[in-house]
View 1 (tube, rainbow, N blue to C red):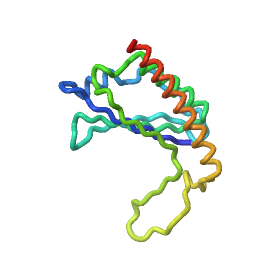
View 2 (cartoon, helix red, strand yellow):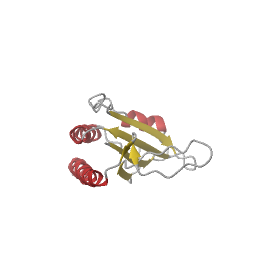
View 3 (tube, rainbow, N blue to C red):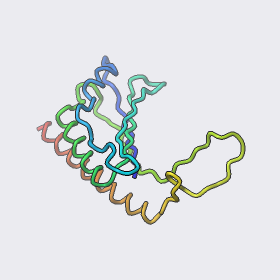
View 4 (cartoon, rainbow, N blue to C red):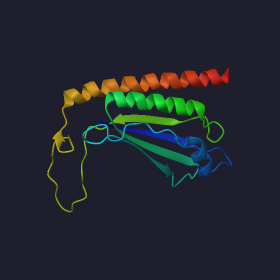
Length: 156
């Protein structure tokens, strides 16, 4: 299964993208590459808002099993706890997490006939998707609680 994490952060006044990158950069990998027949991965793409250059948007794409996702989230919570971004970003962070339900290629010219939702040529099983959605939501919620507990401990 593939998830996307969309994290939106705003640099503090006087801070640069390089400041952010040095604090944010993951020096420990998530350990998911190649462990699944289709090829697992954890890729992060970073963008700067064209209308607000202080806004940094990170899209994290993970293709992994539930167990691999849990392990990767544990690593992420640990890394963020050891390398907080508080010195370089404002306190408010936008967070959205989603599970892929379909992939579509609209790059052809001309008419494109409707097709049901598919991923990798395989029709999306909606019952399986609903189960996976609940399981992934549970993993992300548990990781958020761990992260929040770590952050609360640092503030006291």
